[in-house]
Length: 355
Ligand code: MRU
Image (cartoon, rainbow, N blue to C red; front, side):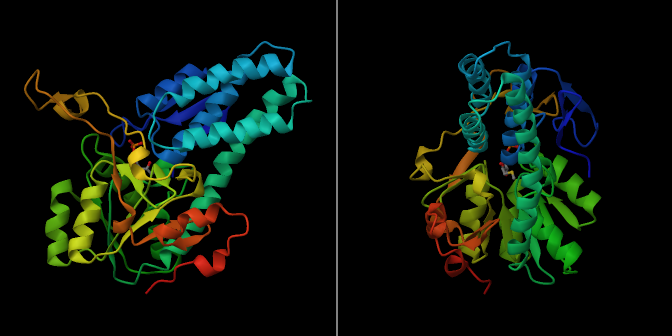
């Protein structure tokens, strides 16, 4: 599997996901503005991946700073952080990365600026490496909920490309299929408007050797009614304290369909995507993107010039539709998610076992 993003020769190199799978092209970002542009234009996308990109963008921005004092360095770095924070509002991972970097800076106030610059590169690389391990752990817990012969529906792309590697929603599938030998099938929603399911999830799973079938978004209900789908696993951009889940537009529709057809609806959520400070899903800022994503497909216009468009990039699925949330610490009821923020939480007792 090709790397989503890496730090190479003092540049941030990202795989251009906006061109996949027709073109496998890497973009070298020489400054943090270009990293920010890449996040906005979906060269890199997916909550954990944009968190990593933000951390690398900050490290890149730091290299350009000319300051001798900690205060001067921090002030200029604030501007870099603000630019990256303003790229995409829904995923909490960018803010999570910024907060982690701020903590690192506070703990190293007495270091010279040259050392701080180095520490920021190391931290960004560490966030990337940790992310892969976290996804494997999510996969281990999530795979317990997958049975031999299951057909799993997923929406958007919460796979390797959306993360440092391995994916969140796809990790349980990979472990079930590749390590546990379970015979599974994956159904990928194409995921309009920009087709992350068709272009990315299908591509990725085919490369990984996991059987995948592509459907249009509006086919999911019919397949559920026929009994084809046994469970759903999706990713998340931000999960709030009460277990509400923001994810790619259309996820809510899938969750409601699951309730009607009594199909478990699971969410794979690294702790970095849980916003313990936010009470509920109505407070999540929902990104609205340009109308051309809806009026065109792959650059070809399909709607009349001048038509009004609503293009919400995400929706929020209330906790009541969520059967379990898979994290790196285990699977939990959405109502128990807030308890994970407590230092003395009895994780073992909170863990949900498959039925
Ligand atoms: O607009 P995108 O492609 O960034 O949306 C991505 C999703 O909705 C993913 O499901 C989510 O970020 C989880 S990625 C592990």
